[in-house]
Image 1 (cartoon, one colour):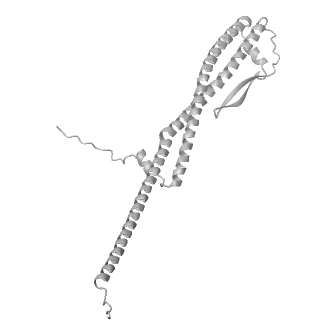
Image 2 (cartoon, rainbow, N blue to C red):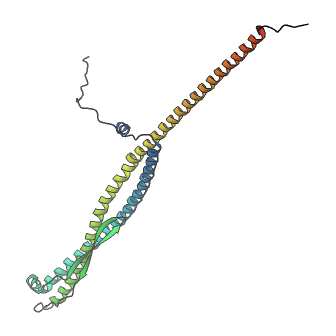
Length: 260
């Protein structure tokens, strides 16, 4: 059959994590070992703190979900009551839009904002503040004045519910983004930073052990050589002493004459 040829794209191979780690290895010294151990302790502590922060934010987010659902149900009910009250106003007093617009001078509700801190994450909190109620003139509305007052109170409650829901929704979005960022940091520490620093520590320890073995082997060789040299010197000395003793016994010179 026809042969298949595998043609590459001609691109250079991507650097692997091992290559990056090996190219950035620190010099194996006791000082660098101590530095890397401190970095490893700090990375593990940071991982633990970020994990606790992510768990706290997740618990708060789940509690917010429950509160948001309840607020949305309350908002639906409030708008339902408001629309029903508005229908009662139209039935009792007819079209009062122009009269209401003319009677309103300033806003009866203001929104105050403060910042809440949730596990290091700042979230805004909105609060509805009722201003001083201005007198409302219901002249010409006949029996519709009571219905207008009721509708006004109902829609005021709707505004309070909307402001509460805005706080919850804003907190939810900010916490959700904070959880994503914190989770990415936790995963980076867990899968990249801590293993890399631990690899550096293991590398430095292995290199230092190898240097110690080499030093021990060199010292042992040096001591063995010194012992061998001493043994050879001692053997030469004993050989010289033995040769001197043998020479003195065999040809020890002329004996003195004996006179009788």
